[in-house]
Structures are given as structure tokens and as C-alpha cells.
Image 1: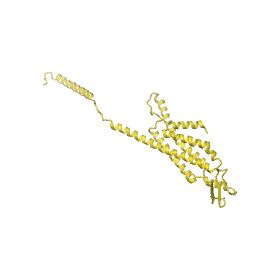
Image 2: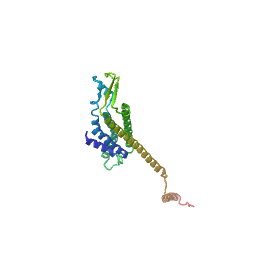
Image 3: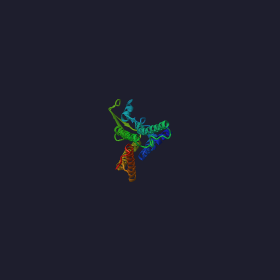
Image 4: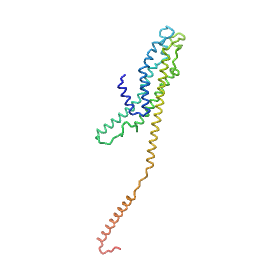
Length: 269
């Protein structure tokens, strides 16, 4: 694993996240990724090698193992971590798209041109929708993988004894034994608990962003509705009336001068 690349990726995601998103990212990194890399792989490394059955029938042990473990816990968690962290890349890609547009705008119109975005990383407009969609993707992925784990192994339980029946080429009912079931059960519940906590944080972040957006819209609506229509001050209206009177008097004087020039003997009353 390239830790520098992972650290750069997590710092980029953390830069544009809310407080709930930062807590979610810390839990994923510390309680899921590190536990997976450091401990879980070693705990589940002997699952197939030490899966013993009380028969010497060739192929029966492998078939029983495949019947009870259609997919390994460790590989399922690896897929879950990959799919859960991928939606966060959508936000980084959207911010990179904004920064690229801003750079092209400066190259085309000069350095002193008006900016397209006040802040490329601020969650407004399309970036807000991208962030919300990424949260819904993460929430859906977490729930789907928890359901798969519950459906495959019946409430996340790992019994010591597994009975393999009616599975060819095993004869009749074969008893098989899982290696270190208690230790594996502890790690299973730990990963399920961490995933459930991430679901709660994701739901809280979704409601927080929606509530914040609704409050902002209500404030903007209140400001626009409280603005009065066009008003004029007394000074401005007085000045306008004075200008209009001056213009009317000038027009009248011009007409009088024209009449006097055309009829000099005419007397005006």
C-alpha cells in the first residue's frame, strides 16, 4: 500500500468536507482501514487452511468451505472500503473542474478579469449537489454491504461447528470446524459497528447540509421580500421639479420670441 498516495487522497477529501465528514473520514481511516491492514488480514489468513471437516472424501472440504463462505469476510470488507471511498473522489474531481475553468478564464481574459467562482471549494450550486449525491452513494453502499454480510452469515454469527449436508461430493452430513471462530466473530462485530457508526454520521451530514441550505434560502428570500420598491428622496424630487420647470420656461420663451419675430406689432396680454 502506498501510504503517501492514501494520505494525499484523504487530505484532499478532508479539505472540502464538513465536520461530520471529517469525523467519518477519521473513523474510516483509523477504525477500518488500519484495522483491516494491521489485524484483520492476519486473523482471516488461515480461514481456508484450517477449515477442517470430519471426512477424507476428496474435494468435500473445499466444497463445504465454498458453500459456507461464498465470499470471504476480508475480501468483502476490501470491496466495501473501495466502494465507500470512491464517491468522495467525485467532490475532488468537481473542484478540480472548477479550478480548471477558472484557470482557462484567466488565460483568456487576463489576470484582472472577474472570477467565475468566489471560492472553488465552497459547496454552492453544482458542487453542493455533487457532495449530496456522494453522501447518498456512500450511505447506499454501506447499507448494501451490511445486508450482504447479514444475509450470508445469519446475523454476523460464526459458529464453531458447521454442518454441510446434501453437497456433492460430501457423503450425507459432514461436520466442519472454523478456525478461531471467537476471534473472527469479535472482528466481525467490530467492523459492523464501525460501518454502522459511519452510516449514522453520513445521515447526520445529509440532514445538516439540507438544513443549512434551507436556512440560507429562507434568509435570502427574507432579504429580497423586505427590500422596498423604488423610492426617491425629497431632495431628488425637488431637484427634478426645478429642472422640469426650468425646461418649461425655456420652451415658452422660445415660442414667445418666435411669435414676436413673426409679428412685431402684436402685443401679448
